[in-house]
Amino acid sequence: MALRVVNTVLDREASGRNGFNVSRLASEVGIERSKASRTTQDLCDKGFLERLDDSTLRAGDAFFATAASLHPGLVRRSRPLLRRMAVAHGAGARLSVRDGVQVRLLRAESAAGFVQEWQGRASLVTPCWCTGAGRALLLDHTAEEIAALLDDYELIGVGGPHAARTAAELVAANDHDRLRGVVAAHGEFEHGVAEYAVPVRDLDGRIRAAVSVVGREHDLLPRERAIRTDLSAAATALTDALGGNDTALSR
Image (cartoon, rainbow, N blue to C red; front, top):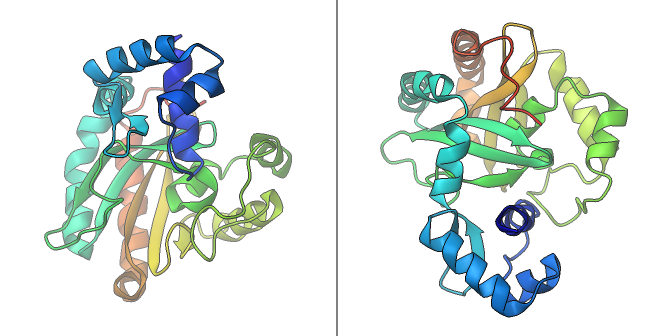
């Protein structure tokens, strides 16, 4: 039951809509409100959920710490690489993994003076179709696989002005970026924000994670070539932290 509750909260958060309060969550999961109240309180006490000021729920730090622990070597190895890119480009640098349509931020580093509400939280969840990291994590997916993945999701109204609104638009964007090996998402998550991302592959060539640099579009555009070079180097370095048989980081 606790897993169902956490997954329902995560799905809602990833959709970009307002979170569930206990009453709405109970209805969505199909349990009595009293049981939902006890379960969510226990999960909040353990840090797997957080209750916001408006009484809605979101995933907590304990959940993401558990996710990160699935491959501590990757997370640990990423810190100096991300920090170096953040400082070099005056932006944010991130390590993310995919869980279905959701992109989970495992580690984030920011340059001094770079502040974005959605950048600082190392447990951020975003949709895969309107972020650079999310698209990088889908670069090996066929058009049919992307259509099946997004079949039950409403893309309209989620993300920034240049976000994909259909599976076909997402496929086209990835087809374009795949040729250059680096995803360039301009205004896809938020107006005026750019995110450059590359997939991190294991020793068998499978995509396990993504590294990205995110910041104000007008600041990053002049640095695009250097960012692409640094991201590719970081992804190559992180491949060494991944074993060929680890399947925990992608679903």
